[in-house]
Amino acid sequence: MPASTRHHKALAAIVHCIGLLTALPVLPAATVPAAPTATVSAAPTATVAAAPTATAPADPAAGRLQPAAATPDPSMPAAPPAVPTPTRVASPAARPKVSVRVAPEQSVAPRYRIEVRNAGSTPVDTTVRQELPQGVSATTVSDGGRVVRPGGSTATEVTWRLKLPPDSTTTLGTTLTTATSQEPLTAPTCAFASDGRQPYDCASATWTAPGTATTQSQESTGWRRQAPALLAAGVALLVLGLVGLLTWRHRRRPVAAALASDGPGTIYPRPATPRPPARRRKPPVWVVVPVAATVLAGTVGAAAWSATRRVAAIDTDSQPTSGAWKGTGVSGVLGMPLREDAFEFTVYRMTCEPGRGARQCQATVGVRNLTREHQSWHGKLQRAYLANGNWVTTDEPATRRVNQGRDVFADPVAAGSRVVLPLVFTINGREAPQRLELRSGVFSAGVRVDVP
Image (cartoon, rainbow, N blue to C red; front, side, top):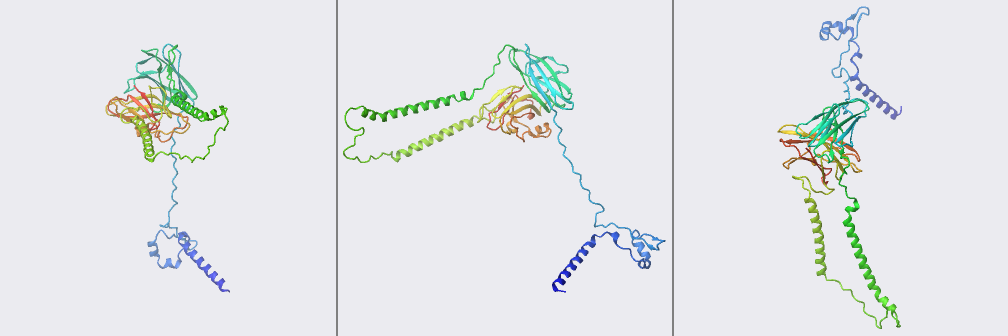
């Protein structure tokens, strides 16, 4: 046999033996053969006493012992480990498809028609509230409505508790009275969950007396806002055109005079002797440097002064802001849509818990993104101002709890979408907020809403 073949066979035998030795520890105990009969008969007492459960009684028919029962190996598990059942995170319940529509009627007294629609396939329990401004009372309320005064508020509201059938519309109505019957009246309406804290949808409408023209402040168009700049540009173009015309006429005058003369000669007579080239006079350096430094200093100073004025107009410490980088601040009342740089805010309701210590005030706010991009907003920029000038920002943990654990400031508002959500402000003392300031960004003018 060649040497190479002997070497391969010896190596194969060694590997085979190593595999057998490795497999021996994992063989089950039941495969071990029973001990010989002579060994058991030589020491029967010791065998039975040492392992009474390991030896089975003899079979009289066969005349020999039965194999020993399988003994569990302490190093091996008795059963395969239990696989944990995967748990699923409970998804939040789907929000009911409840919508609210409010329309004023053409009547002498303020009258509203409220439609609450359930577009879902299951019944929905809801609480509908219509906020009444100060000095306004309800004279007629549709069936099931009650006029109540929420705790901590000086205004009244009309409340209905309804059970909306699937795919149905419920119509409600109110007739109001006010001291000044000719002024427009806005009364927002919201549909809440059965607990009265989570809003489903809100709507608002403004009643106007018949025959009275609606006075609305029309926003100036783009070309009207830019009229001063356009006028200045036109004047600058006129001046430049006049200077160009005078220069052209001044250069054309010698040519015109030569063409008008009757004598001989050329238009440009050539001198007998050539003239030396004239050297252009340059201003001295001691004049150029101070002038350039003065122009540069003036430009930097004007830019710094303009920026300082715009930054100083933003007062974020005590009072609502009166100016900012983007847009112009607007003010309104409950139920009035107010637009700023990126959002349209509508405050539908403001209530506070009764008490003297730390208490929570909840505002129901509608936010509409007016831009074509997703817009983020922040809880620290939303403020509630007290009568003494102090202010508090949004209580984000409490707002998250009211919104069923959802952080409303974490995800941006989608382009063109509208959301209705509650914001919570924690206030110490008996004073209630007098004004809300809402904004989309730190450099936005924001909106201010007077709350009762």
